[in-house]
Image (cartoon, rainbow, N blue to C red; front, side, top):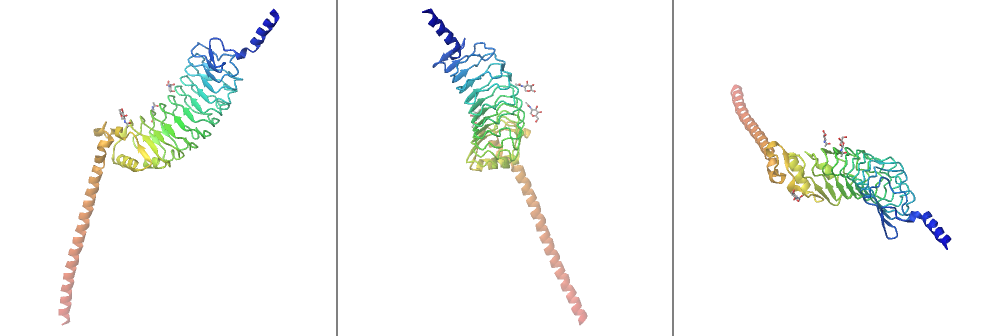
Length: 348
Ligand SMILES: *[C@@H]1O[C@H](CO)[C@@H](O)[C@H](O)[C@H]1NC(C)=O
Ligand SMILES: *[C@@H]1O[C@H](CO)[C@@H](O)[C@H](O)[C@H]1NC(C)=O
Ligand SMILES: *[C@@H]1O[C@H](CO)[C@@H](O)[C@H](O)[C@H]1NC(C)=O
């Protein structure tokens, strides 16, 4: 009577991987494994094979070991947020080829390992926001990715082709980094991108051709950067059905050129400046803090006045020349008559 019971016990411990890990809560036959904020220092070893969602947020992992999730072929959603992660070991995401959602936000990552995306080709949503990433590399295998959150990091530049391979990307969040420019090539291959968030960076320049690849762009947010001037061509190269622009919170240099560019932006049918009413001037000093919409009609007055003065000067000069010419002609005519008279009198 005792033997079968012991056998059963032994069997069930062999099949221990089907059980819920200590200190975690499991639901739906261990498909959903909730290990949030339990003070874990490592990814627990014995996770149920069938785990579909694993939440390890709010722990103290520091790093994700190599093959930490090996064998979890069913995993679709993995949350590793707010867990003090500084390092992802090579092969950290081994076995996760069917993962669809990965959240590593609110950690201390400064870089990603070179094989980061190798096994993440099914991931559709990746959160890496609120880390300390300084550069981007190794995103190229994220071929199913639709939403990438890189906001609140420490990125200072995007290298050419930084997002190549992300041929389904629709939402790219890069706000609150330290980007200084949007360079030609950095947005290449992003023809499906709809939403590009670049606010709260340090952007002073956008290359004229930088936005050309973004043929599906609905929203380009550039608020709270360091833009003083724009080139109309930069936005004209956006060949989209319609794009909303957000441009407030920049230290605009409100001169006649800027007024002209904004009035063109406002008149082009496929471009919409959503926050035009909030666009303020930083320069010239006497306009600091003024709303562009309120002063824009005056910005070209000086220039118009100059043009008028020049036109008037030219007119006066031309008129004077004409009068002088007429005067000389008449004089010559008269003198010619005199000569004629003289010669006639000599002939006689
Ligand atoms: C960003 O980088 C700068 C310079 O390397 C460093 O001083 C700063 O602490 C970093 N910020 C974050 C949030 O990592
Ligand atoms: C912004 O860019 C300027 C150079 O254009 C640089 O001197 C400054 O340190 C940058 N600020 C931040 C917060 O990265
Ligand atoms: C303008 O700024 C105000 C105050 O920050 C904000 O409430 C409002 O939504 C902004 N309007 C637009 C169109 O962005």
